[in-house]
Length: 382
Image 1: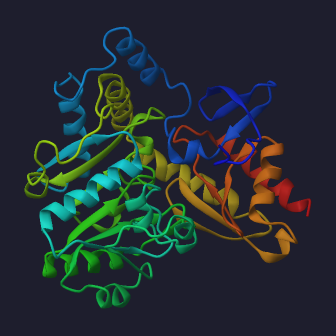
Image 2 (image 1 turned 90 degrees about the horizontal axis):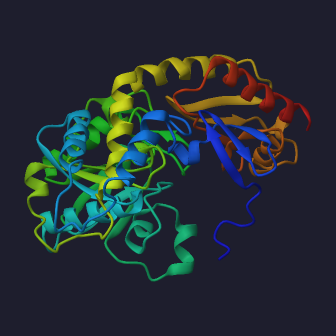
Image 3 (image 1 turned 60 degrees about the horizontal axis):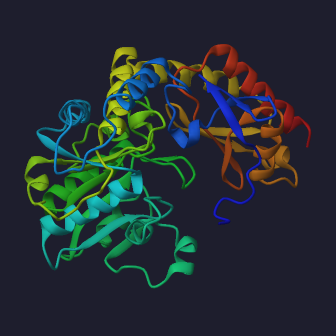
């Protein structure tokens, strides 16, 4: 089906921050499959864990446990560091957000079912997570969407407060809006939202699907503001490319789910969680947040010298290059991204005027210099 248009490349091999297509052309991957392969491609520890597990046990139903579930849940809880909590594994970010919405509804009960989220947010493409996504243009082909969702301007406390009636049971936010343009929330905003939610007994759900596991220079994006969410949703980088999602909730919220309330055939299977376990342990061993902060500084320093870059926004290695009008000429961000691809650099246009970059944490100074040089050449060729 024509969901993704005509693919411009067929990739057949990857190593670290590099990809090769079926014609042998090398590319620098500064998108990481949308912030997924944060350890780079074919990471040795993850590869070994998947191979060993595939040769031992791939799958049993969730009527039984496997040896990786408890250790991975414990690792996630330790990194979230928001008090005692429990984890439910999923297969993707959309499923994790779907589970979080159901969990909030069951916890709050009938009459407090409304979820407030932000305009320009992105929470998934299932019917419920699409309804939570604050992009009305994505809603229209699928109306009527499930009711119980409300959207407010991002990063504005007064706007949020005006939307909070007695029927609101949860607020769902991203610490950095990824698909919405790489827009970071102000730390004071998240602190104010946390206070308001506590005062009104509203659950705060932080969607860390694109920002989790060190991507912003902290283990999770909300940690920059020093808050403790009630529910956290995870996916993307959790297993370095193997499909895994998860929802974490504080103990009393998690306790409201009982047998049959939510489930998934494949979620939490041994093969997936072997990949997640190896990935998370690798992040811990390398001190991923510190590595990311170092790589961010190198990338920002190099971009500062590029003519035509109006500004760089974002956090850690989830950044957007906002392009000045003059350097773009008549070209859209998508056209500039395609020109970069043709010169061997993978990034994407997150808005018509901005390029999103999310390289692996293992990216080198030489690769940063090569990537920025490609951007320079493309912008000069206007």
